[in-house]
Every structure is written in C-alpha cells, then in structure tokens.
Image (cartoon, rainbow, N blue to C red; front, side, top):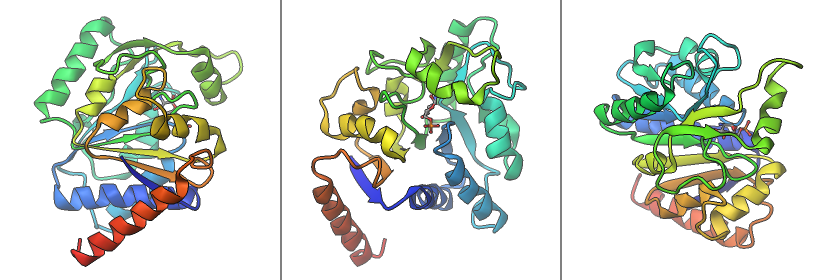
Amino acid sequence: MQIVILKDSASVAEYGANIFIKQLQKKADSVLGLATGSTPVSLYQGLIAANKAKQISFAGVKTFNLDEYLGLEGTHPQSYRYFMNEQLFDHIDIDKSRTFVPPGDAENPIEACQGYEEQIKAAGGIDIQLLGIGRNGHIGFNEPSSGLMSRTRVKTLTKATIDDNARFFKVGEYQPHLSITMGIGTILDAKKVVLLATGENKADAIKATVEGALTAACPASALQLHQDAVLVIDEAAASKLTDCDFYKHIEAENQKLLAKLGL
Ligand SMILES: N[C@@H]1[C@@H](O)[C@H](O)[C@@H](COP(=O)(O)O)O[C@@H]1O
C-alpha cells in the first residue's frame, strides 16, 4: 500500500486528479471505476478542468460506478446516477452510454448484479478504481462483515451509514436502506486502486485500514492484499496512524526515485 499524506483536502483532490489525468494520458480508452460521496467531488472538478483545457479526453473511456441505492431511479436527485451526471458526466466529453452505474431500479436486482459483473468483464476489467471510505471502514457499500472476496450484490446498509448519508435527504423523504454494490473481490480485481480520505472523522477507519488486521470488520483493510493500492489522505485523516513519519519518509524516497528515473 502506498500512503500519501498531504496537508489538506485540496491537496488530496489535486494529487488524486493527477493520478487519473496521467492514467488517461497514458491510456485514452481506460476503464475507470468511480465513486460518489463528498470526498471525490473536488477530484472530479480537477478532471473537468483538465478536460476543458484539452489535457485529457473521455471520448474513449468507459466508467463503472461502485454502487447505487436500491429502489431509486437514476432520475432521483439522491441516486448515484444523478450525482455522477451532475458532478462529472454532464461537464466532460463522455458518451453517457459508456457510463455504467448499478441499476437501482432493476426489477430483478440479483440478476442485475450478475449483469454488472459481466459488463465490467466485457469492458476488459477496471484499470483504475477510485474509492472513498465510510467512517466504519466501508468501501462502496461493503459494510463491515462483507466477504473479502465478495462480488457485486445487494447489501443492507448499517444504521451508521444511513445516518451519515441522511444529510443528503430531505426531512421525511424516503431513504433507501438497501444498495447494489461492487463486492470487495470486484474492487480488488481493478488494476490500480486509489482511496481518498479527508478529515478527522475518517481517522479511525484509516488507522484500521493501514495498521489494523486484514479483517471483514474493516472492509478497506482488504486493500492490504492489493498490489497497487494508493491511499491519498490529509493530515487529519492520518492523525491516528502510529507510523505517520515513516509513511512520509517512504513517500519522499518514492518521489526521489521517480524523479531520478524521470517518471
Ligand atoms: N457509498 C458511499 C461510499 O462509496 C463513500 O465512500 C462513503 C463516504 O462518503 P463521504 O466521501 O461523503 O464521506 O459514502 C457512501 O456511503
């Protein structure tokens, strides 16, 4: 796991956006795994700016989102499809028929999960997967106790996640308690994984992800098994890490080596 600790959330977004910009410059037909939540919003703004400045194009790209609420149509303002259109797809040169979000309105969600896995496979697999993290260590909607080899499936949300996401729903508005999410195994199949976390309320989850045991109790700890996982976090999210200075030292050495190799 590569751990990059930066001073604030703006630096995290910029660093994360640069990883995606480089990926698209290297491979114009990349398959991107995308995430929702408030954390990736500034990264998406960086990608929109790079697209407008013609540094990158999304014309050859395919995208797969991690998850969606079960029971919400894509036109619902709280659906993740709606979020992605608003935060990214409506502002870049992407063909929306090449953007995939698990179908929250599927008549048969179980079949739809299998179909989603097949679509990812048919696209050649995900080149780079963006992740946020829940306070309880969830990735996508893989809540604690999720199987570490799980695939796309219907998942019940914990009370903590429902409470955390309640801020996006109006008082009295129906808030789903079920979701369709890529599994942890699906996420681990991505060639590269980039997890962003900012703020003190993510510090426990980051501590468990980096320095805790590999356990279904913290789904993000499964990234310890990935051969190319990068955690880009701010000082606040890193504040409970025991070996913070060591991670900063490793990253400085990495950067020196990359500069020496001209990469
Ligand atoms: N399903 C999403 C996750 O993919 C996201 O990582 C998490 C954290 O969101 P935020 O970035 O707003 O803290 O929220 C939701 O539960």
